[in-house]
Image (cartoon, rainbow, N blue to C red; front, side, top):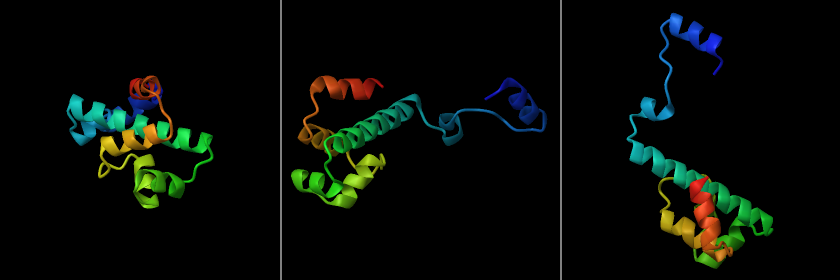
Length: 103
């Protein structure tokens, strides 16, 4: 945010902070959310690069298309294990997984 805009907002009583502060997330919770979103982005990118549909990926992993859509959206109801399983089924290497988490 631009400094001048921040000053104006603070002058009229707004508090500026991070989404983690607003939601009251611990540093651990915020880190896990970042990891989940990085994995979701990698999953979608890898799937699309291989011209695989969500339904085709779902068949590979024994799941449903809607579950794959939730994975790609970073939905918290989907386990990180399921995201890893999907990535590995698309041929992701440990190096790729590590890079996705570090992003």
